[in-house]
Image (cartoon, rainbow, N blue to C red):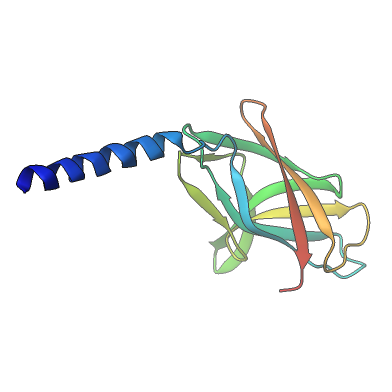
Length: 146
């Protein structure tokens, strides 16, 4: 009986390893739960938020963001300086395999400046994230009122 149970356990472990090896590997980071804050027609900037996830097997260093809908897109972090909230540009963001970075109000976020046109709730903004090795990752992000 013990041999039979041990055999079943070993067979289960082999099957688990085999199935894990057959799973497709992520080849690009993702931008999950992403959204762009809706802006009044006269505004000259807004922000984007979400979770950047490195589901690949290697570190990814993000060095730039861009969008055809905005003249300038940059990664910023909100920090407290002398009791005042200040935004500081983040030159690069390195994510190890499996690591995430949460972009949220009051923390790390994307500043979207110089809009090409007014955006309304329900519109979609194309964002391009560029890695240090030159790869570009494209995301379609909805405009929301939150």
